[in-house]
Image (cartoon, rainbow, N blue to C red; front, side, top):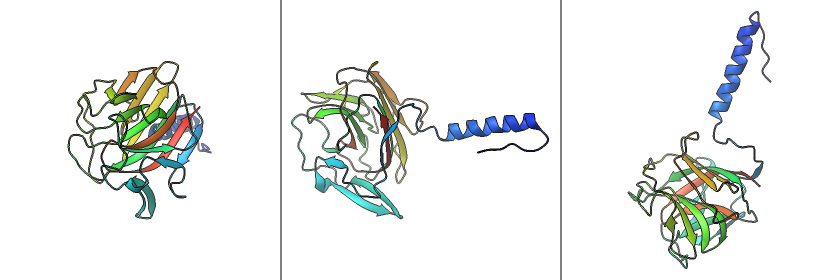
Length: 226
């Protein structure tokens, strides 16, 4: 606890307010009143994840830190409808309202469609939302997508490039409000949405990480929700 001392109480109070404000500003990755329901740093392995292809994922130690990532672009999983190949879903967790944050590092520069994906409201292999964080947006890249017993379809018309950098950890946040249907996605800047949309097709479901057909490492995953 911060205790102000000295002969300038007014100044001390101002300093306390400034310090508290700075803490909040620096720890701005999550702005939610939802409780923390899942935390993963992969220190105990990857047993809490269900994978579409076990052979496509590897738990690695990098500079003394465990990360979980994709070791090849195209896995042996073939979805029934056109949708991502590389999916890791949290076991035993279904949410309606939530915020997920995580760190991701792209490990293979494939150009315009270089991506990672966030999956949510996943009810089965052919019904879910996902956010495709593709480097260059087009109708199939860099959009919030829906898969509903048919090939993936963009819900957004995002024009923002995803600023991937080589050998760099990026911060991602995605929030979902089931009552309003609001979906917001953040990339590095946790205050300004990178893209957003409103849709109420799916009310709840499972949450996961992965890629359409690229390679990434993931770490520091936090899910807040109900």
